[in-house]
Length: 261
Length: 357
Image 1 (cartoon, each protein chain N blue to C red):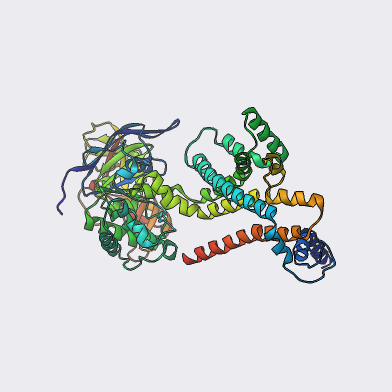
Image 2 (tube, rainbow over the protein chains, first blue to last red; image 1 turned 90 degrees about the vertical axis):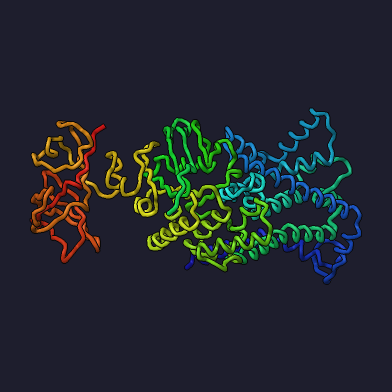
């Protein structure tokens, strides 16, 4: 009994340690006070309104959304194609290519960031939004590949064989059978890629062209001057997006699954 | 039954290598239009590889495959017009039964109204009308396999290919489906190639059984022919329960190793003095306390060593002729107990001579 209560206490402390900072950001974002800290002076949405009126933040938000969406779509497309190639066809050195695809996860982000910059320098290319996008795709790709491959293992090739035997060519078989069955992984991959791009800061600081800010770099920049309560509000918005999206997707997936059994 | 004798499927010296392994070692096969042919053999004998090559899922290393006078081994699978049924049904789990069955019709420019009509007909044939709106997961295994069959036959394929379609079903269901399968095949008159390792299925369903082992054809023929006149030791041992008795051909029978002279009707042209094996099916030996005298039959004494009670019949292990024979006899009253002294009746017509290669 004693051990269990100790474990309970520890668990509680760990969770507190993990979530208190986040909770504080959310709570303070509704604080009416002039400065971003305690004490709470009253409930207000004024910092959220202030956010919406702050051109720099709105611009950063747009950049992040666009970047996240494009990175998600590109990384997911590439990830699906790569996974299909590696798992459905006999590619020589499958393991080698697989490791290569996953490796951006293993390499420290700073190294990856500098590496890509040097590569661009060698190609005589300036830092641009395209480079930034390519970088985000690079970082997100391993996660997509992992998710898609995990799902693809469970989709037996016999479904494709059946579709082909009934007259579907390989592309039709893919879109009629494999892709719909892969949908949960596609969704998960898109979400993963979007969230990873949306809150990436380290590599983004290296890659962004002058004058381009994403939400994280914008927050980072703002923090250098002062801790404005706007940052709390911005933090809350980011939490809602990065936590809310997957939850929503999960709910949709469950609703779909229920229809079929 | 009117049956045209045209060959629907022809394999000419088909060879398939998987890396170093030779899975199919030069097989010739002719399958008549409208017939039901079974490729029977243990796992790894090459039967599934042959089916997959006909289907287009594998490409033969060498040889030719012809269907209805058209060489197809270089035609991609989706242009072959074959109906395929897999062991695990392979219904598309995200599509309704209607969309599953209609799948092949959508690639054949069939108008919508006709698709509906033909799907309904196909479901009628497999005796599952009205399930169009359900999803595969809402049906039982047996029902799913019927849908898979409907999906394969609705496109009116040139050949129906069945890859162990019954082996995922439990025993009771399997027999029901076996009867169904035969009925549907007869009704549609569709040329069918069936792959199985289950001899009961093969014997019950087929017009022709092709017994395979180790990438080669062992024997082909009508089920009763293959069963009663095995052409090789492998076929004799693979089908049913056979006793193989070594002996030497004499002018009036076969001299077994213990000196007994076994009557033999057909020495298959083998000269006197040839060492052969005599195949004697377990159910062809009759056990009794006494036998009425009979021409062309041998009665020898034996002793029941063990028995295997199977309900309608019993399998006995009887010590006789200097060896232990398997005997399967129906049970009239009580099975003979262990240790019982019995007489075995062996008829000349049941002894099949098997030359040694």
